Image (cartoon, rainbow, N blue to C red; front, side):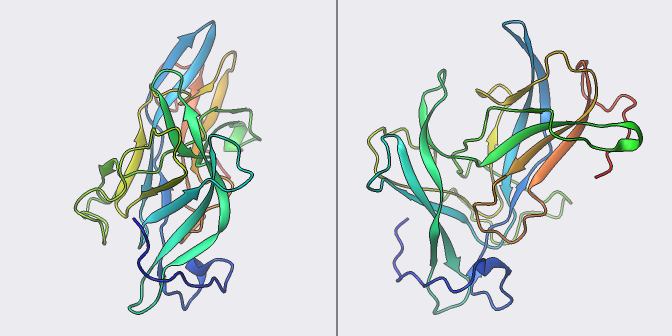
Length: 254
């Protein structure tokens, strides 16, 4: 995954929104939470969900991580690479944005993952569908960014344009002493975590009423992409949890 061409100099804050862009940009979309389950643990009620970050852009999400002087053990500085979209132009290496850390799942091993790749939030839905402030958050924020599964367009019209036939970005690295890594998700591929993956939940203990359960990719907007308006996926849930469905809750109004 080394860059053969010289890296271009960044001349605009976000080359993906530049009308004259010469790079193929990613676009991260978080699918709606699905496969939801209630987990009872140590007297707590944890509402878990399967989640998938899909790249629906024109180019790959590619992150190069390196252990820099001053980085503590188990952390690397992350920089995003944008591949050229015009013949004769060079890839663009963006300024440092975010970190990659050696994440301990406690039950499934340790993996190098991008920090703050996503967020889990729960907001109450009031009368008339008004969505209130965040009531609870989930602990999972780190993701590998990988090519786990090739996906089809949500409208059923086939694969996304530019989807590579095979995986380009492989499984999460588990090498503790690594000092250089490349993570990413190709166009038309998804990084998916099942509902029972460690920390894949929001604690809903003692909550009652209607809520907006939201997953959001790149919540801090550290990564450059085509659009920041499609990063969230949400479902309406009624608590205490007795299965999926709004069960009389109003549609949320934002």
